Image 1: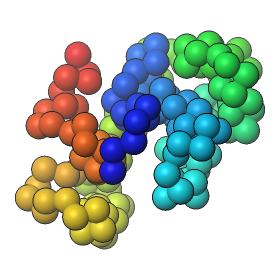
Image 2 (image 1 turned 120 degrees about the vertical axis):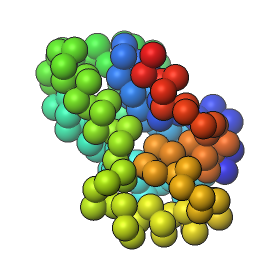
Image 3 (image 1 turned 90 degrees about the horizontal axis):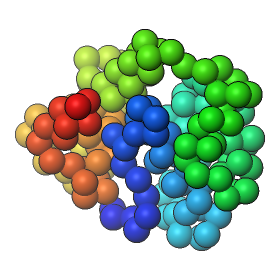
Image 4 (image 1 turned 180 degrees about the vertical axis):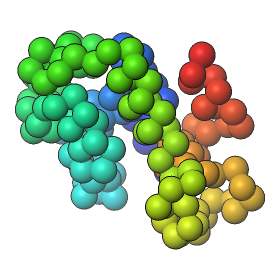
Length: 150
């Protein structure tokens, strides 16, 4: 489903995947423009993992976003209140997030179930959660992950 204003999983904030997406979902929800299907996972799933990785509370991040700060300003706030990530920690985070669903506990059930649920082609192109999201929201293209890592 295409959603005006939502950012993609591979969009980077200071080199970090997904953070911009989390912030955009917070803004869209506050503006009444985020589809209800997304409500249950706000602050959970990848949002929760992101906040736990930088050691901040999602509700506190939400307050920073709703105060009008840019994604970069919110991330800097996270680094100041939680932990500042080294280049290696960013690599580990980006690697985990972008490959979740590929050769792990989601591969056999969750990924195929979501492919069916979203009506996506079951032709081997959707391997990860990021693939599912990007394809469902109309941004996916072959090798987009490769471009994201450049």
